[in-house]
Length: 246
Image (tube, rainbow, N blue to C red; front, side, top):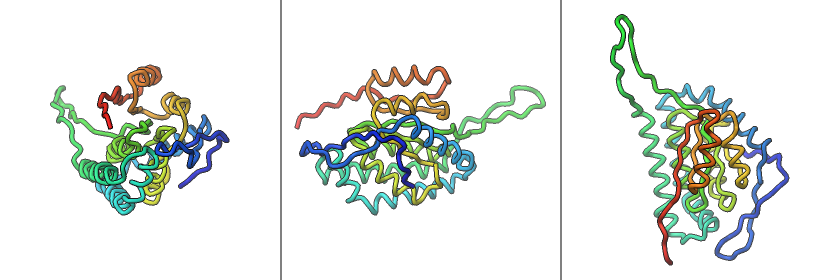
């Protein structure tokens, strides 16, 4: 459900095709980040106990909802990033739907190595458990699809998520979050908008057990350093090297 930002600061969202601002988004501060983390932690206490079948059901419903709104989301992504409509619809929205369905299936295929018996008279086993709240930061170039790459596997495994899209391209992620909010229990998936400082607040917050970022090598170093004091797990996708001349 939409929650009003406690921050009065705003960032302009610019259409790269025209160079003109067409919307604005909150520049969230500490209060917003803390509220999102509190909601995610509260939701985790029950969501971690859902069955793989239940989580698969949530993801399949989300995939169908995104598919039903594919044209709308593709047009939002075009206005977000300045991409061609047909390319976005066929190669990004369709791929995102397929990826969600993949992770919906993976939710029922979780497995781990069997443990041997290491001490006489004792039973040894490996139990896979959700990590907890996952903080995620996504880039500007594939806003919706990159968000899917982060939240879909996290939710499939029983985690909850707080995600910050790029401050320049938040629109498609926010619309996707609205669709997800009609399907998921409250607090399971949360989005906060803002600039680099908001991302820092996400990473350094005491609640998340895992931090995932797609960005520059510099940003990755900063995230790893910020996560180190609390020994948070980190997932870093850094330094894209795929130049294209149009």
